[in-house]
Amino acid sequence: MSLALYRKYRPSVFADVIGQEHVTVPLSNALTSGKTHHAYLFSGPRGCGKTSSARIMARSLNCEKGPTPTPCGLCQSCKDLVANGPGSLDVIELDAATHGLVDDARDLRDKAFFAPVQSKYKIYIIDEAHQLGPGAANALLKVVEEPPPHVIFIFATTEPEKLISTIRSRTHHYPFRLVPPGILAEHLEKICKEEGVTVAKGVIPLVVRASGGSVRDALSVLGQLLAGAGPDGVSYEIAIQLLGFTDGALLDDAVDALAARDGATLFKTVDRVIESGHDPRRFAGDLLERLRDLMIVDALEATNANSILRGLPDDQLERMRKQAANIGAANLSRSADIASEGLTQMRGATAPRLILELICGRMLLPGGDNSEAGLLSRIERLERVENIATPSPTPAKSTAPTPPAKVEDAPKASEKPAAKAKVAEEPVAEVISPKAVGGGDSKEAFPESTSQPASEKNKVMDIAGLRRLWPDVIENVKKRRRLTWSLLSASAQIIAVDDKLITIGIVNAGARDSFVRSESDEILRQAFIEIVGIDRKIEVVVDASIDTTSTPEARAVRKDEAPSDKNLLSGAALLAAELGATVINEKNK
Image 1 (cartoon, rainbow, N blue to C red):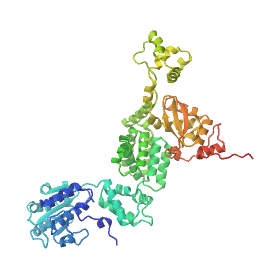
Image 2 (cartoon, rainbow, N blue to C red; image 1 turned 30 degrees about the vertical axis):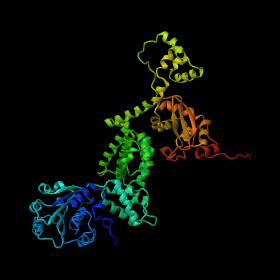
Image 3 (cartoon, rainbow, N blue to C red; image 1 turned 90 degrees about the vertical axis):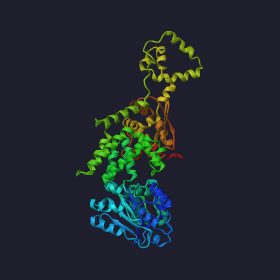
Image 4 (cartoon, one colour; image 1 turned 90 degrees about the horizontal axis):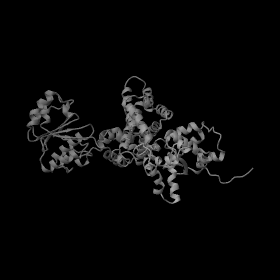
């Protein structure tokens, strides 16, 4: 039988204890200076090194060259107290769960006055000390307060507040903490190398997540994965299935569908979760954790988020940054509240899948939520639209008519070359009302329209906000013309926007040419007017760097939805639009 990893890699010196420098450094300094105490209290969560540190403390005290923070490892005491060693008669380990009676405490008190067999100190390590009964704790009180010079007590507990205060006040208390994920991941990678087992990318973060910061739990989980490793090592798929976590692709699909308010894709994702055998409760918990990560990414920039979300690669952080921008802070907060409430409801007898689907339905319908979170979600959506739309021009100070002298002086003040004057007049035409264009006085409309110069308009334009509403624009295009929708949904993105143009990038030249030939620019322009509220000319360019798999529309397979407009694509044009094919040669039969 092989030795468990948490026993095989148990530390024997303070330098090997990871993540507890706030404890090991003061203890090492005390051993170096000889200012040791007669009673210690080690507290903290399970698996963080309390009992191992107590054994190292005993080894350091009883070393022939001790007290020293670096035991020699050659004397009999060091050999007996090494990790997984035979143990020493002078170091007595007791479990308070089974030795917590008054008679046990009296027996310990009586034996404490006998001198050690061969070491300098007789050391009592009392594990789970919070389970000492009141009578046993009071029976130990006197000997803990004034022990013989050769006796040292080390109490280890996960609940120090349950230990009676009279004993706590007589000890030096050292609180242990959970190991940070970065340090624990590095430690696990080192162990995998020493074991000679290849571990796929992404497995170590899963182990760290399953352990919750406990080194012992992490090594137990890692030992299970290494024991079941095949010739190629531990694969990510096996780790996902054994540990019960949700595949990241399912979470990405769910979040993308939530950002685009695509209910069909979201419920299909839930169905895939159930069909693949995942627990709905675990998926809801993982979705809540993803929403939490998105809130952090939204609050911090993608580069600064690395300091908190250390286990995520850069490409995942960039993807999460886009997801957070598409959903919005208020929607993220509301969705997280709904997921948290749904997790509580899943503890009952109701079918977990039903609760999960209801959670998704509530996330998609902020309009049906009259709470403060629902109102904030709707207000956020309106504000995002207002941040993109160009505001209607208003007079700068008052609505009083402009004196004729100022109107006549306007041409004089703008005496410029004809080319510059022509450029200045173009943005003015966009903000003049239809009535003014039809029959109004151009001199009266000119001062009103120049109340907002082109430079201020450029400040109002927000390309990030425009991209957030791109899924809504695509849905509006779908209602107008399926052909245009098929060209844009999976292979287009907004490249730039100014006061005259909205530049759309399409992944290949064939799709761009089909877009131009079918006069789809007018369809897209009308969609922008209806959804966003801005009227700009559409310009289409080829941009091969567009990620065609980042949107829910691109991942959905819609072979059964053929274009139904009169401007249908020919066979060659369809291949060029969908697959990026290029015509090499044409032959007439």
